[in-house]
Amino acid sequence: MVAVSFYLLLGCLVFQRLGELLLARRNQAWLLKQGAREFGKKHYPLFFLLHIAWFSCLLSESLYNGPVLHTRWYIWGAGLAVAQVLRYWCMGSLGHYWNTRILIVPGAARIRRGPYRYVPHPNYVAVCLELFCIPMIFDAMVTALLFSLLNLILLVGVRIPAENKALRLLQ
View 1 (cartoon, rainbow, N blue to C red):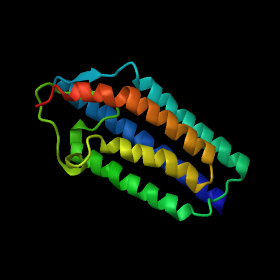
View 2 (view 1 turned 30 degrees about the vertical axis):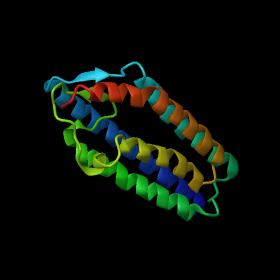
View 3 (view 1 turned 135 degrees about the vertical axis):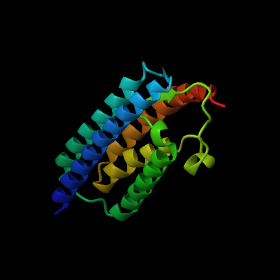
View 4 (view 1 turned 90 degrees about the horizontal axis):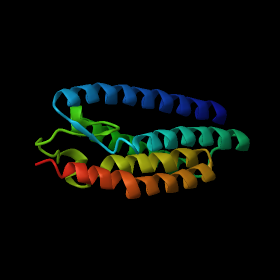
């Protein structure tokens, strides 16, 4: 039963991520028609690779261990649920401006609704929660800790500074 849950969750995540990439591509086309400029283009592949490596390590570690449910899986499941709600709140708040890339329409107003009223980069909070909670549900602690650390280094050291620089162009 645990193995079925594991594969079902992984399948849902892959389907979700592919859907998000399609939405991002559609939004990118719309933003470029509005005159958007892309920032942080060089570091984008690093995040793409990070997520592919995370999926691979999650699969490998979970298969090596069983997969098994963490004894407190419901805590991590609740964290995942919070992350999902936050992710879609972010996407809904940004509308056509939501993207996996940093795309800025010069002179546009900065969006300050939804979770962006409270936190400058709420989508990254959701991603950090997901990268940690999903492996923890299946007791894949190495994946949870390693990729949370790598993601945090990339976010704080590269992505958020690039995004903040780009956001200064907005009113």
